[in-house]
Length: 410
Image (cartoon, rainbow, N blue to C red; front, side, top):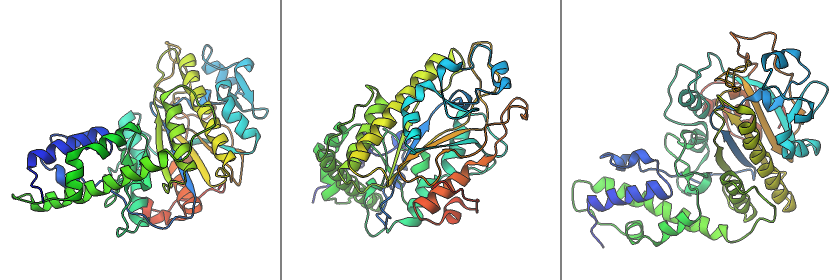
């Protein structure tokens, strides 16, 4: 057996953190071995798939699903409010931003649902803190080190059958949402990174054999096991990436490429039930309209292409797409033709098996604000509880740490 020095392991931690699996904070950390358990175990699944899309930056929900018939909307946004030529009407009161034509098409087919006024008590306007709250499903005044998807992995998976790709984030770094107390998901943005993992002689050597020679015996054993799991998942994902090719046309954009990658993994019967992907660029303090519309179009066109791929393969009915952002924006526009950080927001869902479609609740009440902000009517953890219980068939109370009333759209 080969001998590997601590220097070798530190080098490898850096390689893996930048190329496939581990968050950047591991680099240079002398306790890295204790944090290298980036694994998850395969448990039973009901054949359902969940794709979580995160709008990073705080998307303006009022210019996404638009209360166009409300005079208060237009008076609060004289230069930012959308006119009739800029919307696709849902009913006499609400409309899609016209950039969301792809989502509107899914809606017209009965494959989209919209939930207004989603938030949580005592909202936080910090991007980082509010995103932590959404990703961990914590109360505003509690700080958790594990995410809601990660705790689902902890509660669901069988640790004797380890497969790290059971929850996959399309990114270079793993979000808190996918970190459990015992089991983590993994992050991988570009398929080319798999070649880096599978061709690196240091990783391959440590993944297949090890020999401790210093005080790091237990750490080396731990690292050996983790890297063996990474190696297994890299090979598995690479194999499935070449099995099926998308036939739909996606936007020439990083997010479009990410959705295409997820579609191709699903089409290849990859056993991953949860995918997580982000679309940044929604912090629109100035010149909001054009910039937000561009991002929304990329999202909606990618989503429609994704649905087209899965419909063609008969896989759309077992797939649920859930879209959220860490907070909405203020009702009133600012002096720079943008909007500042707000509170409650709209969530969007797409899939072939929705029990309820279209608008799931009433429009935001712009006559009843909290210091200029929307009041939340639905706790986002009710949505998580619904997805966990009704879609993933998991014990939502245990995973979320407290009971939440579920909704009835899935």
